[in-house]
Length: 353
Image (cartoon, rainbow, N blue to C red):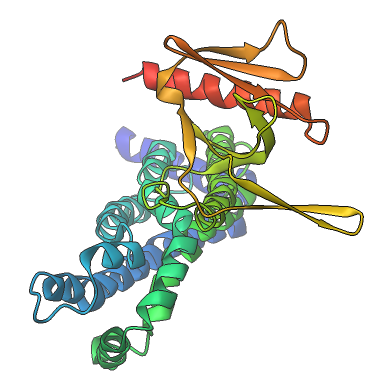
């Protein structure tokens, strides 16, 4: 009898907290957001399954046989990057959100689960980062008659429910941008008295930082693609993890020969074969199509502004020293800041391995 009375008192207390402290309407809206997290993730995973089963896998199977090949395997991977990982990690995220939804209560704490979901979004971030590469590869792929016919034939499959190939390939980018919006709505409807309110705000900042980094690196990766288009023998230059940070006119290891240099996150590439045209009072310089030279950060031992020469930056690679002199038209301080930051980050990163 005493136990029953205690349970009744506890239920009254929970009801009071729900109505007064947590606000009943906000509690219901909070559950709606959790439910949307779960249902939309399931829908997204199902769409990625269709993209993999009806487009990615058939193209890969055909590429294994020279007689049935539509596109080479390398181009397929460029058109549909990390699809398998996006799908598999999406399944894990969907299961996590479903578990939160099933176990949900007005005072539920699920910060650890949300942090786990952020960590599982790496393939989504990489897919978004490579989206411009994907777009350019698709332009080339659609020039292949067999590929155009394949997409048209596969798009009429009933299980796609009217979704086109273009609808499916844009979904990972849209999905990544949707998470912070839902999380913001979740925090908006979470009482400041909730035991995990502050944790949710920290997770929101983590989400926003992820999105900001993806957007920034995506722009820098797009810059890399533009760089590769004017450098000869640059097939190995374009990588998913490489991006362009800065570029400009420098004198590298030469007091007279002007080079155009590109600063990447793991090296400096430069072209010395620069032509100059004079049109009236304006001078126009353009790059010749030639093999580039490079300074790999993996070989760097020391670096910093020169103590002897003005507007000069030294990079020590083993027994050799590369001298970077900055003409008057270049912002020396800005270059030094970017070089110091990039080289320091690269060296710290490589020390971990």
